[in-house]
Length: 219
Image (cartoon, rainbow, N blue to C red; front, top):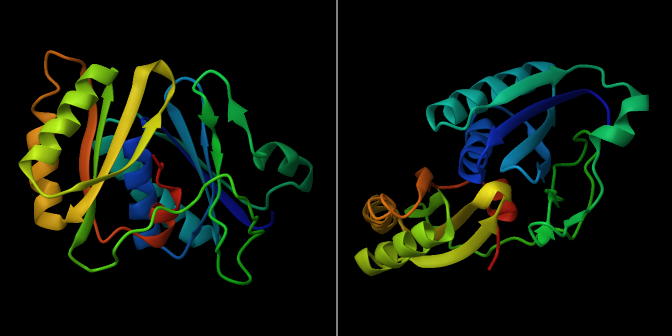
């Protein structure tokens, strides 16, 4: 790992994924790793030139704040070689949440800072039509998200493509479909959360970046 590393940590998976999409659309950076902890936190590691990383982190932090992700962030320039062992996390499985907690994007462009290759995360196949979108409903409590996603799927023609559990009872379900259908499904589904659990986030990403597709949770 050389050059500049940006770190953005959020509460909840949905704010993190939306922040990743925003960062990649704001500046020429690469997502180095995505790492979960056992307390509903997600840390995004971004590499690139110092200027690009600063722009990306600012954009990602801004959208995460808007979504209630309570982000913290920093930019590390000229990363110390002695610190690399701590900054680069190895593949890890958490027995507490019964899943992998370190994810990597393995198709960074040639010459990008230290791209690594891992099979801890497999891409979810998605139709790349410009009208396709991803929808996220994240709650604290399983009953709430199950009710919400059932309602969402009945409201519009969408497909469930992933589910992710974090610590603290956080669970995210991801749907895909035409932008109009996903928007309607998410809007209808999130209304069902009240009284069953806590809504952490509900969001739609139009034309998601390739890195977001590779980092999506799978069923």
